[in-house]
Image 1 (cartoon, rainbow, N blue to C red):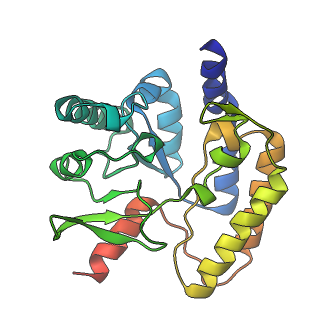
Image 2: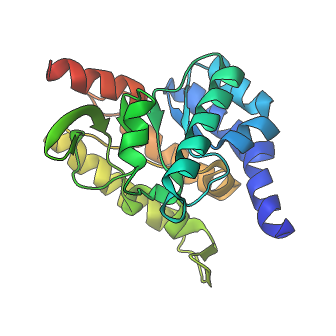
Length: 238
């Protein structure tokens, strides 16, 4: 619907610029997971991410549902997305986050065919781990996500087709801060999933800035892209 498309457009027109400025302020490299069609519609956005030193990674072709596709179609769209991002960014993507974190019976095989270093769609651990196929190592690192550390479930007014009230952004940031503090204490991974059209509004950027100020004040924190994390994990297990 036009209204939903306009929400997405906000991310490119306004939110992405604010996110880039905030990342620059703190010197944080990020990974931007971009559907192929979004990249085609906003090639300047892709160029801005690359110019700022961020990673461009796969996020489907048009945010399709992998679970509803047959294997040939899923493979075709994945190959098309990888080619498009390579053409627009100048670098072949090495990682994928599936749209809505859906993972079909064929997603891992397609990921391996593409030669990707990592996936970031699954939730079996707090720390990165290697994906297995039929009990055998695949060489693909999983950088786990979780809805707890995602802005959409909290801050999107209509989520999963249900209109509901959103909690105050500072309440949400408190959850993320607790997640970070525990990860720091354990010496582990704190991975945060943000959408420019969701987090990019003024009041939400304010609390994201406060969260980053808290993180930046701690000692022993390493900011890294997902690709850098995957390379680190593979090196530790080589």
